[in-house]
Image (cartoon, rainbow, N blue to C red; front, side, top):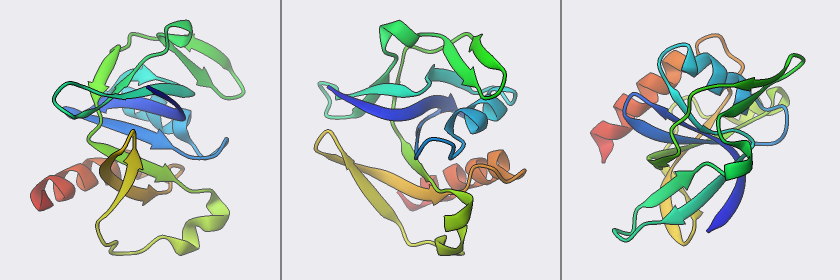
Length: 144
């Protein structure tokens, strides 16, 4: 088991791990996705493991279960899903790095717990970020 500084959500039937530095929008994007039906797995830290079928899984650390940070407001208690398979990792970038994002990115992966998983560099603070994530899930599911 690896403890990863990230936020995990379950959205449109897919487990998504939001990774990035502090302030990159992990909790903010998760909160916006939750208004569209996403379920929180964990905010701030996520336990990543491999299951018996060699699939990457994310789980809620017990001490932060059902809590999400709402920056400048406080900690909010929310319903949560304690575990989900990881289908995609979003590597969130800061605003001063968005110039490096590819308009039409090549497929790439990131290694977690010894396994490779689809990864997409992503800017979370755009108004269209939830819709772009939905589109990414559809596009990536067509490729694999």
